[in-house]
Amino acid sequence: MSRFSEHHFKNEKALIRVDFNIPMDKQTLEITDDTRMRASIPTIQKVLKDGGSVILMSHLGRPKNGPEDKFSLKHLVKHLGELLPGTTVFFANDCIGEQASMTASMLKPGEVLLLENLRFHPEEEKGDEAFAKKLAALGNVYVNDAFGTAHRRHASTAVIAEFFSKENKMFGLLMEKEVASAEKVLHHSASPFVAIIGGAKVSDKILIIENLLEKATDIIIGGGMAYTFMKAQGGKIGSSLCEDDRLDTALEILQKAAEKNVCIHLPADSIIADKFSADANISGSLSNDIPDGWMGLDIGTMACESFSRVIRNAKTILWNGPMGVFEMQPFQHGTKTIAEAVAAASGEGAFSLIGGGDSVAAVNKFGFENKVSYISTGGGALLEYFEGKVLPGIEAINN
Image 1 (tube, helix red, strand yellow):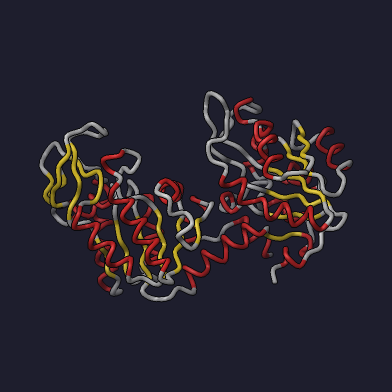
Image 2 (image 1 turned 180 degrees about the vertical axis):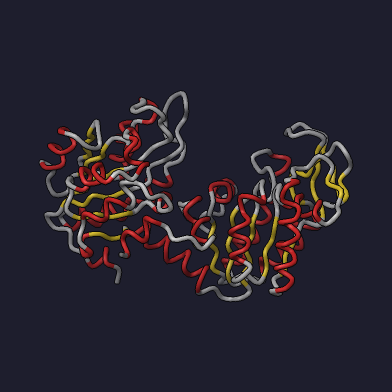
């Protein structure tokens, strides 16, 4: 049993760090995707059901100079009330100070208080101890349920834990699931273990690829970063995305993989276009023989087939990053095909972990969110976890 599940919150005030950093329409400030809010509801409900009260703290966006209306968490209050039917949800117009303290102290069992955006105070991101102490004073149990911020040593995600005893600080249900899923892939993976790494840049993914060379049997590389590997091996890539300063890195990765018997799969062919646009002229080409003036924007038919075959044979799958510019209709087929293969393998018993904003967006867009094993809410945090780094938000609870 987890510490959180065993803990009884009767008459306690649980201070829960959630990740309500959700996308909103810039004009109307309507919520466009409430996945992260919904993910935290079971943790909140457990405390309320036990007879405790809940104080929620989160950041939203990247406010630069103090409070900005578009980044106020007041815009989430109504929807939070809808996600917690029958529950009174209060809002404090600051996360520290008199109103926050007063409202928190008067909170009755079964009630919820949402604090204003933590990042309206620069002390939050600085990991300021005095600021963390003021936050800690609002509750008597600290629950971290924000995996998406676990890689930051901020006041509310790491420093605050110092003000709570070992038995009064814990992960929430979402954080427990995130950590267990990542651990399963990183340390208890069944073989074949296929890692699918996409996205634009090799430089963003070097550390994760190097760490996966110790764990994976196969690494599939797609997206813009594949063309750096193609060029490094002497291929012609036209005007495809390429990091010329990473050509040696790409060759080193290929050599290390060969030494460790890890099979690196690059896309044999690509869907190419004469400009970066949905209305471009489109053709197909071998990925290492793209004509001048053309760029690869998706994986081609042969790549789709060979990648799918590898994925369907897997027992463990990690997917981080799309295969092409899937936001544009003509270049979404590759990413959709990968999503289908991951869903099919999961249906046959493979454990699949999807992490990183774009991969998660793709799985949701193509309707496979219920056909994979686990979708992580933490993009940067999950990446750093797989790079082998210690995450301050996790360490603060474990120590």
